[in-house]
Length: 482
Image 1 (cartoon, rainbow, N blue to C red):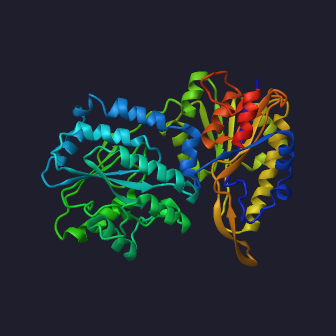
Image 2 (cartoon, rainbow, N blue to C red):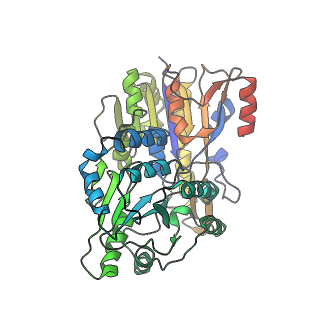
Image 3 (spheres, helix red, strand yellow):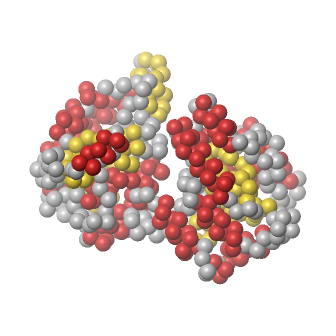
């Protein structure tokens, strides 16, 4: 029985111009050998950290499912029976108050669902509704797409709604410094912070200044979008998120801004990861395209090796955003036995697991030399996996997120250099059942990688794969993509 093996070297990527070279071919000879004998292409990622990368990996491209769920299960004819919705509607009806939406603009279509929700309210003609944008994008290369999304949102908003603040999701600390607290008060409660009516020009200015969207300090697009006492604040989140730094900034700054007892009404669409008690419309979304769901439908079993510190997070995403004990998914802490070729062969070929995921999160907190040492050790495991998979199983070697960080070269050499792998990651793939004369490996995104591994062991036309039969049209498309 053929099996599928995924080896993730998280943080590994394609060196961008100006990046310090880790000399991968020298420190990882087995990986270099694999590149010579396998398919090789790249994937694009917007992630520089494990949480968002794991979500996209284990759940795929969730946006359409999330929007459909919001439309059909949350914002529908049954919404009026939702107690949280009823409470929000009551508070919106208070005269001379405003409704504030906070949303991450990752896709322009979210505006349709915001409009749908606003249309369910009975709003007086002069009721003011503001849409505040939380920029979560990790790289400056995403500004052009972000400008297009924001302009689309602004053009298609309900007539009641106006764009208000634009702020980086990670721009505020969990515990505000005095400088952050002062700026938060100016931005959120006085609208006396920097003001730009033409957001595209401001975003281009931020791009030129090399400020990542998620770190944008924040600016106003109008004069009266400030939060007032008795206002309602709604986090329109299409997935479970942590906004505690923003919630904390609102709570802490409001006490000083109002000079009276604070009475703000906070809500979220889907339950937040939060230390605050924020009422929500629904607790969770069940993801039918998750790893757990696909394994269940096809009676397959998976073994996931991961760091102990990441085990709960990986479990949460692997089971479709539900932390449950799934008999089809087994978790194991990273094991030094993987350096033993006989042990690896017995693990892969001598157990009843169908899919193996080896999840290595590299330590990038020390030095370049330490990073090279880690890669050299991982390369031994790669050699063992390659040897036990050849002519038997599928093997994919890749990463889920890139890396952009300044590190000293060594303990004895404190010169700081930039490692920049922030957009593209490599995909190495080999499988005896896909001869190169008949198949191609196409570039894609990180949410395609797990499905590709599953497709190698599951004959399901609904599972998308980056491996495709060679055709004349396909060859032309592949050359265009590259």
